[in-house]
Amino acid sequence: MTKKEQRDNALDLFVEHGFSKNKIAKTVGVSVQTISAWAEEDGWDETRSKRLKVEKNMKLRIFKLIDHSLEVFEQEINGQQEKGMLKHLDKGQIDGLSKLLAGIKARELNFSDSVKLFTDFMEYVNGQDNKLAKELIPYVDGFISELRKRE
Image (tube, rainbow, N blue to C red; front, top):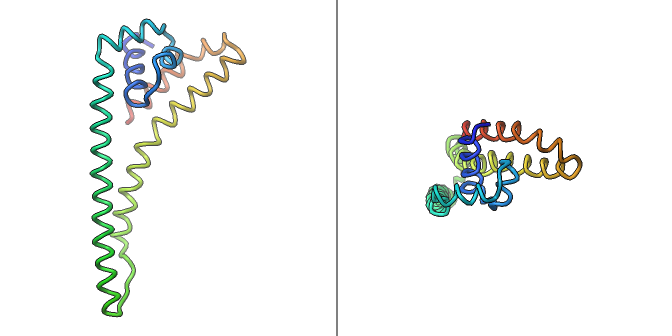
């Protein structure tokens, strides 16, 4: 793995997943001093802050859309009840709500869970066989890089 890929992965772990600099150093395979230097040079704290604001706003907007859709459906159901003609939501309405919710879950779980799993795995391997853990780092980093590119 190149230094650029290590640096990109480190930034991603800091910004997207909130890893500490110590944990990033262990995961990426560089010193904490290197991570601190990269963070300072590239303005990681500001990038993380902006990203969190954007993500929070995006989630709020999606939840507002879901809430609005539910209100419309509830109004429709209440109108049907008043007329004594209660109908189920149609397939399109259910699919729309399901897709919005699935989008939120997929975004939150996919990459983050993979990184967490591999970080935990590497900590386990390191506790069992430090030499093997060091040998695996480039492969794990490469795998995480590929996952990040897919997102």
